[in-house]
Image (cartoon, rainbow, N blue to C red; front, side, top):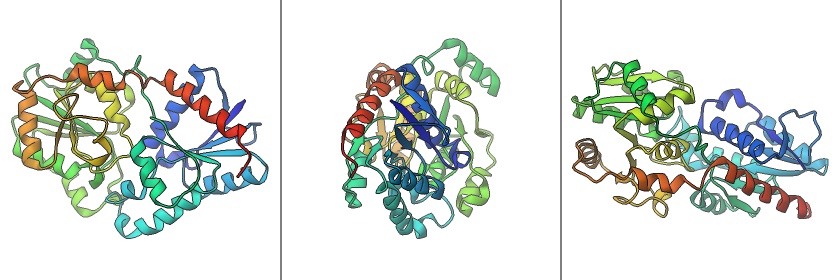
Length: 336
């Protein structure tokens, strides 16, 4: 069996969660000795499509016409498109119609969580949908004391500085406005947001937030995974104030690095993450501030090991095995 990993328009999403997920797929297949290609002119048995650009849609149609099986990886939902880029809320109904059209070209769908599966089923899609985590490379994302020191040295932070980090695009949905507000409220703590989006693509209030000048607020932009790994090891807290996700790869990375983790209390994490057991949760700014202080000042119990246990079975070697089962299942079914 040979899989084609197709990602039309990858240059547009390479630094996003979708881009990370595609890299994870390649690694998962390699670890399990599953042959794959990214060349559309190469031979293959099944097309695994990751993006929702027109080129991907038409490629899926062509594959089906030629009798090839197609799996669409449903990374996107209407819900996580909203509150993102300029005019995204206004365009959300059209976006939903488009992704439904894309997803309906497939024989089956893969989506990262049972939560995103429920959202997609609610759009009226009748294709088989498999919920499978994007996974995490546990050998790469792990705590390391030397990397922790390197992170603090790079940013000029002392051992006594309390450092809160987050990772994401510059979009409102990721909670960047709240992150900046918390930095204003807590000048004694350092706040670092990793990630980047061209500011012309986002609303004025997000541009204004990113341009905020505070001595304790840092926007280093996009950095490679090696630097994320250092930050996860060296910070005091990973803050994930996102309002909507299909999974959140950066959350998996934080947990894998045994980092203190504080997330927004949103539906996707209701059945997976438990407040005060494996992570901490908050809804309002006041709750976030209180939790940050409790975690960083060690008045709340440490949950690092319990958090790690949640991702210990999501290594890419295991994700590859589950991908193989899905591929074989789809290949053995008659084309719909």
